[in-house]
Image (cartoon, rainbow, N blue to C red; front, side):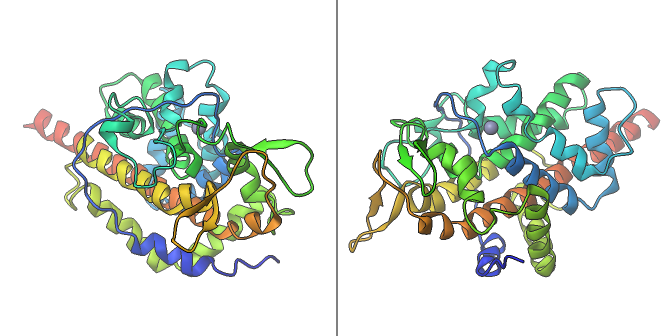
Length: 340
Ligand SMILES: [Zn+2]
């Protein structure tokens, strides 16, 4: 069985990387024609999240919202249900055209300082605005069922997308779509965005592992660090809302979204995706179009990709539990008022 040699230490990064608060301001974006992690990678993240959800009420909430007022699906395991809908936003991007820009944010070329809300997403029409928007829609009991259901499908998808470093890629090459590269043992050129959507996860020791096998591998990693994972979920809970659970606010979920974006961008986008390493001055050695990637590029990135999948799954589970808590409290408040 393939051994993930350095994942445990990387996994600790999930735990140790506390999410800092940032004041919230909305920003812009644009890229065109990109997708996301491939469907199987989205399914892995959704399954991890489903497996980590411990509240029965959250499980029911997800089934209830997705059913849009009909009988909630109770037979399928939650992980199967969530894995089914995880790639929905890509599969139906032609239908929901106005949502296309929610899948990513574009950043200035070769500027590795970080994502900037005012500069990169001033209208909130990017993933930095999309995640908060859909969180608030899922949590809003006054919205129609179909709208909340669509918001939940997008939320499950976008929390995965924000952990894909090319979804925070440079504007000039459309998040890596304009960088055509040769790959070992593959004919023709493959763009850098697509390489990160798909090949960077599979073109290594995972080659013979299907997405269910990869999910199980990552769940094993999570369970062996289970206490850390729990602590991480609680810490992130604290960064969005206080323990009394009354403050699921747009500003707080937006700050968390911003932190997730900057973490992905600063740790991966320049360092692992757009470059092969750094020169003696610490500057990135940029990949150029028509360059050939060697196998080491893929082998050396499998650990950070696994870490991103775990981070996305852990945070998705957390966000869904926070929404559920918020809904429970809202319903209790309504009942108190009604009884009073
Ligand atoms: Zn996407």
